[in-house]
Image (tube, rainbow, N blue to C red; front, side, top):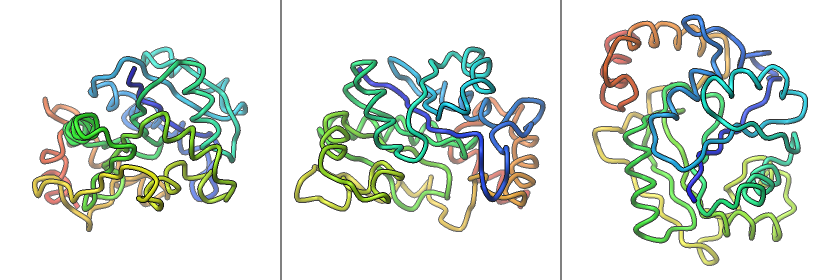
Length: 223
């Protein structure tokens, strides 16, 4: 079973409460789930710390996501708990900062990962905040057992791609149409959120608003 597992938390040091900031009338985290719903998967889970459950619960339900609470800082453990609970084979990993995920790129990446049998797959050269990672559940469970480094456990996947001798790693440059390393789509600061508001307003009536080329073209026109 392939599951989209979205990690998010309510607190943020640089932009407090950003997950609940309204982006065209809906909280940011809802907009992220809205985008991820364009990616085919067997299940969708919003994985958060215990202290984020109450505010996230109605939003997850509205978006059609299951809700799971796990460790706050040990995000690798949180993912592995989700894997065990829902009997997942492959994880499409996403983060709650990114309302402009390139869903067409995500579908292509996951297809490549599955066909190659990759333990870890992620595109390079994408705009910051546009990508997801496709990871085998077994690889994450192995990482959980083998690494105790706080960095590995907070960021989930570094143990995999930093040990290519242990895992089958697929990290190609994204196709040219999706590239844009000078473009910032994540939301981590007030400036990022202000930019997101402008971009979302311009995109919301686009029929392919979650496609990478559409987002890049509008970003370059607006910003």
